Length: 586
View 1 (cartoon, rainbow, N blue to C red):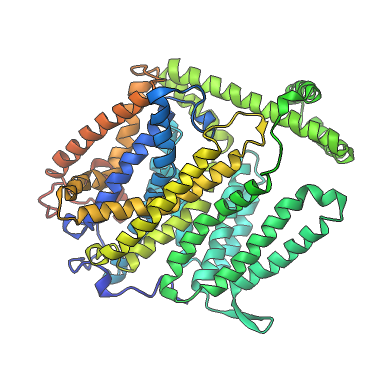
View 2: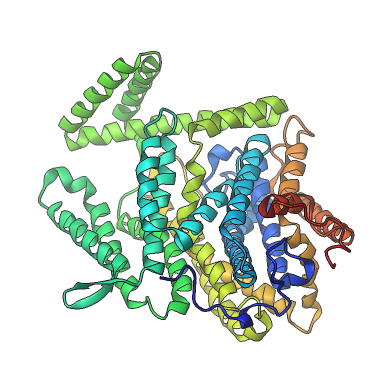
């Protein structure tokens, strides 16, 4: 059983790769990765600047209602040409960075796991501090979980994975640690991926040899499909009918595809990565299509539901002051009462719960806007800590989507495509020609269905619109990356896109600097420009990006690494890297 792809050869890396595992020097860098990283950082800024001027509690509701003119089109541009596409590129780049470091360690014969664990811990620490001290939209903390998951995928042994699941599951029952269940689910998920990628054992099923994971998915799929069939006759199961049907279908589909396209091994990372990224959004798309004929319905049109919501809100307020015994008894009583309800009453209960949820959401938005626009720095930090403490491990949920892009990025490097990108320009050209119209076409189809959502409104196809937009991200992001590489190697003025390489080399420093500048410019404790019009936000972003690109060139002409990159490498390799550019060979 191999621990990584078997496609590694000396030809898959530049000839100047050093044999000693140490902080990577300027001459060893793959320039195209730095340029793509710089390009991705621009898109990340365009996307993030909105959420320094808007409550993060409003995330996921689309273009703000009421926007007109240039502000509307600025928001439309970001939502349908940038949002979703550039964090996907960043995830791809993290996988590439992982593969570069792994490959260098294999060539040098030095330990990889220890340094990379330190690298993950440092990344998580940077992300946690960024979240609490500057901005809750940080992605580094989430990437730390995904990077840890990738270690399980490539190196985890099934005995240790199972033992970890037993121990970690116990932590979920500690008060305040409920969100740790996301981490436990992630470990199990990564273990299944490892089983597929690295275990060559097969089982006989209906006279055919199936990989272990394929057989497991098939068995579970048959059970779930049987439950779905039973739901057509069992009244108590009818609510779960659609989810069961879809779950059974996708489990059986996973079993078939994982068996049918497992070979050759050299393509396994790419195929698995793409499938893992697309799977949740395909499921979302299917569920959205199943609701296509549902009539539009506003939950506030039900006076009974509104009255019930007010009553339930009063009960919740009373329970806040009750002891745990009373709370438990009330929950048991509510569960029994709910089970005895008829379908019409259950609908009113569901509507009442949603009304209360939406009311709480609006309260959270109002509170966040007040704190960010008028509060002191200490008040903003206190607010972030309070929000974070409710679900401290919720960011780990990103690993279920990002792991696919990590694997795909690792394949791009391990197969030699990125390290010999000039030799693979025809491949990048094909990806751009196919991916760009497909990705942008799906994005426009999403916009046609709806650009925003009114809370409390059903039947507006918002779930379907989001599914299409997320599916668009994979082909569009791969097309964007391919176009950047084609421009880089073109014999035209467009090759000057290499100016982004230093910007990408200092991506961590520039990413954190962007947050510091935005917080200081927009928040009430700084210059107080919170709520700047959307078009002006983009102009602000462009101005900062231009300054950062110039600063990156100036800095790297004098020093080997950006400030935060230097700290990150020092922690990773547990020694002080040379700081001056001359010592780094630059």
